[in-house]
Structures are given as C-alpha cells and as structure tokens.
Length: 88
Image 1: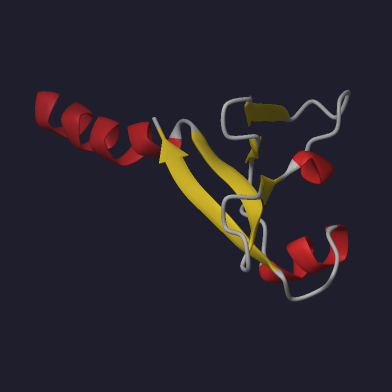
Image 2: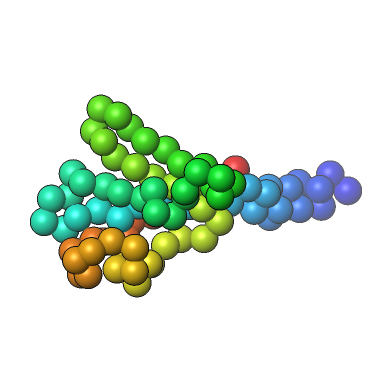
C-alpha cells in the first residue's frame, strides 16, 4: 500500500502546480525583456518586474509562442518568445 501511494505521489505531485514564466526579448538588444501585454492589471495573471534590469515576465498556464510575441510587439520578427516551466 505504501509503495502504491509513493508511486501515485511521484506521478501526481509534479503536476499539482504547473506554470510558465514567459516574456519576449528583443533579438537585437536581448536585455530588453517585455511581457506586460500578456498580463495586464485585472486579468488575474501574475506579473513580475525587476526594476533593476527593467525586465518583465508573466506567470501563465501555457507558454507563449513566437506568434504571440509578433502579435503583441512590433516590429514583427524582432521579439523572441522565452519561457521557463515551473512545477511544484
């Protein structure tokens, strides 16, 4: 019984919380990282801002794509989607 419970915990626990921290960075100036178009105030999505580097990120349920960056930031093709997957 303990073995079955341990296996279930190992399988289910990592999926308990799954989130993506995403932003779009400028391929010419990679220090410019933006994301607030994906997590506007009142949307219920957590946003992160590092005032020291002026970097932005959003905590999302699914990762953003290159098409998302192109749709939200211009000029098209100059912004690269970047996401880190977090589980816990």
